[in-house]
Amino acid sequence: MGSKTVLSYRSVDPEARLGLPSGRFTTPNQTTTLLGGCLFMAVVYGFGLVVKDRGTWGPKVWEYLAGFEGFPILMWALTCWSASILLIKGLKIRAQRKALLLNLIPNDPKFTVTTATALKVIQAIESSVEDSHRFMYLNRIVVALRSMRNVGRIGDIDEMLQSAADNDESGVESGYTLLKGFVWAIPVVGFIGTVVGLTKAMGEFKEALAPAVAGSGAQGVSQVSVGLLKVLQGLDIAFISTAESLMLVFVVHIVSVFIRSADEAVLDDIRDAIHSNIAARVRIEPETGG
Image (cartoon, rainbow, N blue to C red; front, side, top):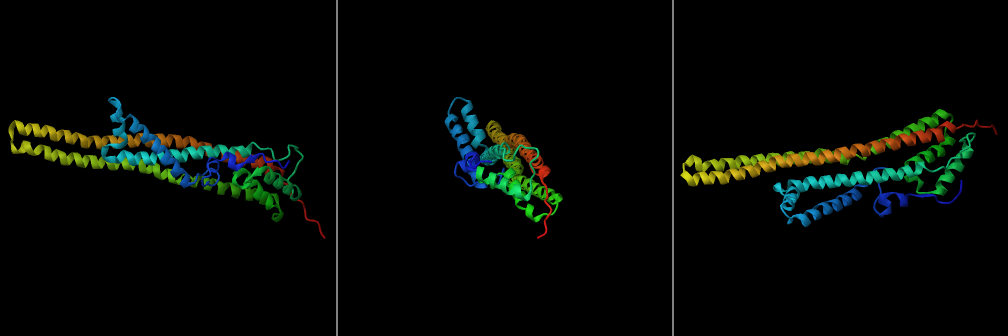
């Protein structure tokens, strides 16, 4: 148990490394994720601007990014923000795992955690890890050990650790609230685009049939043809908006499944490490009379 710093929160957490507001444990700060989303948005639309005049595919790419009454812009904005949340969350999960690699508890199988040794363990953690309270694993250990003087049985420690684990799990779950909202909102924007596109198509279809009803001859047929092209443009907005939104939300959802799985895995690993290193070694010393 030395005093040399072996782990620094500022060196492993992605938000802290950039000097940005840092969220709790594996939950990113919303301001940071918004900045990341803006950066992703700049990359996506910067690419679109570069290729918009290249060949036949460039204009098509730009149309999918900024055309169709502007609905893709909002969908891509929500998608980029979602991507920022998932990326930062993944990096924060990896940062939290760094604490699990530390060996701050003596390897001696005979070592027990008592009120006397608990203080030494706390001192070892706080002297070896900078901002140890920002690591879920270490914070849970320190909180439990600081409370040992106030408990009278081992079961109290177990209950305390279980309560801390439940609180951490609730905190991690709340970190997905914004993302869940975006996963809901992206296809809704696409469906709104569908409604707008169909409404536009129906209006254009009515105008397209007007010359035919008036019986304007060949000129009327030509006008009907032009009108039908506008109808198809409305249908493009309707169907492509839905298709694009569903593809984007599909990608976001699949990536979020993997990130959530990693989040749950680190929670399980922390629970196991706490049990083997702390809970299984706790010994409550009987009070001696004065």
